[in-house]
Length: 130
Image 1 (cartoon, rainbow, N blue to C red):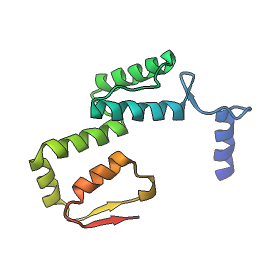
Image 2: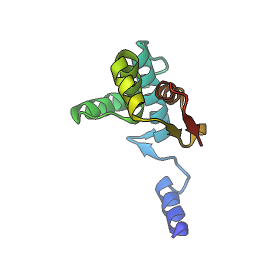
Image 3: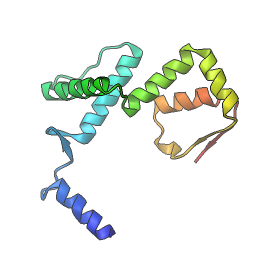
C-alpha cells in the first residue's frame, strides 16, 4: 500500500519531478506568500516582493474565496486568535479558566505566530511541548 502511495505521489509530481502547482504556481511558494501577506496584514505593514502578477491574482482569488465562504485559512486563524486574546482580556481569562494545561505537539514546527498564541494561552505556566 505504501509503495502504491509513493508511486501515485511520483506520478502526480510529473515525470520530470515537477513540484505540485496551484494554477501554475508552486504550492510552497503560494503558501509562503500567503503567510507573508497574512503577517503583513496583521501588523499593518505593506508586503514586499509581491511583484509577480500571477501570484497577486492567486492571493486575491484565495482571499476572496475564503471571504465568500466566511472562512479562514490556518495563518489567518492564528492571527485572528492572537488578536482576540490581545484585545479582549475577558476572552483570554475565560480560556485560562477553562483549560488548566496546554499541550503543543510537533513544537519544533511551531511558527512565531503560533508560539505567541501558545504563550498567551500558557500564561498560567502549565505547558507541555512534544
